[in-house]
Amino acid sequence: MLDKLSSGLKNAFDKVKNSLFVDDTVINELIKDLQKALLSSDVNVKLVFELTKNIKNRIKNEKTPSGLSKKDHLVKIVYDELVKFLGEEQRTLNLDKKPSFIMLVGLFGSGKTTTAGKLAKYYKTRGYKVATVQTDTWRPAAYEQLKTLSEQANVDFYGIKGEKDALKIFESFKDKYDNYDIVIVDTAGRDALSTELIDEIKLLKEKINPSEVLLVINADIGQSAEKQAKTFHEAANITGIIITKLDGTAKAGGALTACAVSGAKVVFIGTGEKISDLESFDPEGFVGRLLGLGDLKGLLEKVEEAFKEEDVVDIQKKFMKGDFNLIDLYEQMKAMRKMGPLSKVLELIPGFSKLNLPKEALQSQEKNIEKWKYILDSMTKKELENPEIISSSRIERISKGSGTEYSDVKALLKQYKQSKKMVKMLKGQNPKKLQRMMGNIGNLGM
Image 1 (cartoon, rainbow, N blue to C red):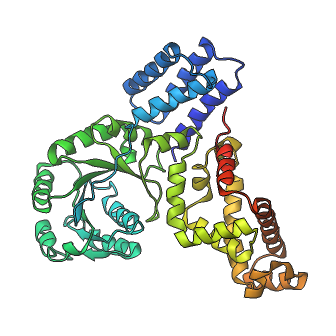
Image 2: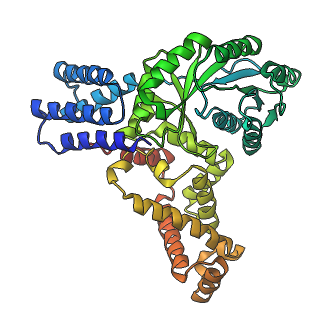
């Protein structure tokens, strides 16, 4: 996500880290590098200079707190100002009513319908009873697309194929809505913010009385997001913004910052093509990832989605006893796959970005995990529970059954032995002590 901006910011900090001491030359170089990184990500020039001016003033005028080095204080100032720049506090949706209606608005090509499906999946996995409603009567494929996405998200879908009256579609299912906690309404877009579109949005909004009106914006539009956000806000009183396709454009910095200063906060960001690739936007965690400081809140959210609570408790018990077999490794691998690509997960962990792991190595590990799944599927229950019995002849049989090489099975067994060795080291450790150990890993900084 925002690789260009992230690498630019990290490079700027590396120069500070490698300097012998912090003087005016180092500070000026940092400011210049920050400006270059932000401008290359399409952030508005005026905003860039305002931000870096604030950073420079704070560096010059603030006294370094006791217990912090000047370098650490400098990093904290940049972090604080970037968080403030991107909206400061995380915005959560108001879902107190039952049902709570979420109305999505936006122009053609913004990814509104896809986002409706992602949003449905997001809240479904958090225990809400969710339904989607198709009121986009302009785009012929909208009905089928939202129906398919709703099936993928495992939520109920309502719509009338071929109906041209958006309000009629919504009111046809009024007796159904009380059965849900959240009802997501996908509205029609246009090529431009026309009077016709505004009138339709106003009419629907009046009848729906939504708890939230969310503007969906494609990150590709860059700085022009500010104008679009303000115009939609004036027309429909939007309560928040969702930025889509954030992972695939260099202009994303412009869209993020433009929205942040428009008066409407970014509440979600689309980070990929899968239905699960939607994240709540937390400025603190987002900036942490950009600077390579990690995002523990985001990581814990992904872990909660991937692991059921009873599974986590069971794994903790096994860790405490030093008990670990290939079935446990298999279950952990399945859960890890739910969390997304390895590179995305690792960027959430404090300290990992400092290792500068090559992308090729991460991609290779992703392929290994995929192979290992087939290998584990080819093992017997007895082998999974007691991997020590796996001899050369068994390895031969497993490799043929899984369509992999002999060396692939050996690599998996080696990984298992390393994991088991770590579990033995942790055996009997106090959970609080383990937590402190993990915290210390995350605190490795400048």
